[in-house]
Length: 294
Image 1: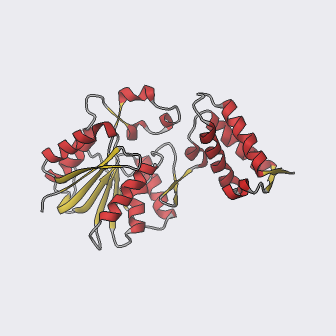
Image 2: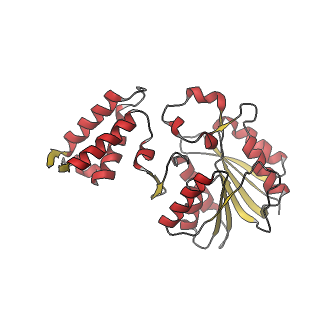
Image 3: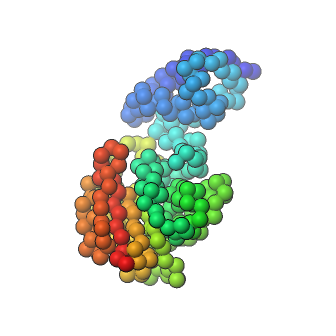
């Protein structure tokens, strides 16, 4: 049996329900509106234009049940991207689940920065802590001649990386690596570009985080309070001492805005040159880049 309802009425009804049921009471009306639109687009193909035009929507029992179940999970603070099993990144759909971080807009800016500054026709690129593969796969899509590698400590995350690479029809060389292990066997592989968005949230910040963020993998989020630069130090050290980078190669980090200066200082102390802090669109110190001396 199909039920016909105007798109505006449907949106308003569902937004009200999500706000009423939200267990942590942290969703704003704008956030709820955006989330419900994502759900309606996923299950019904409904667009913003359909809402504006108040198109009549025919919704059968199955679609109605799927939408209601999804919104109940979201009302309990489960991220909409995990509920739908996908997230948008750089104009593409990526599979996500609780084994990987949800791709964020700031990371799109990191990818754009790398693409804009790339001077190689066929760069060798490494993404450390690749997770869903959003950085590695996007760089391969945007620089097709590149050879791209993705490393992660989590086998579950790497499974998602490989699924996304298959879905988006690119070849990514993925590998399980613990970057804090000083005995990494890098073989003869060297890279022109190394990028990483490693864990950088201090454990003490956990209590201040929104409930939906805590659904994301702790392994990819948190660092000990006493070692906030743990992964930055390990990655920079491997780049230099294990010679993972070619001379003139670039290292790009996404960072905790409160530790950008410390990260830049660490990279300089380790011997990287032309170390620069780059702000994101919100004017926050979000990226640090440096070059290995040629």
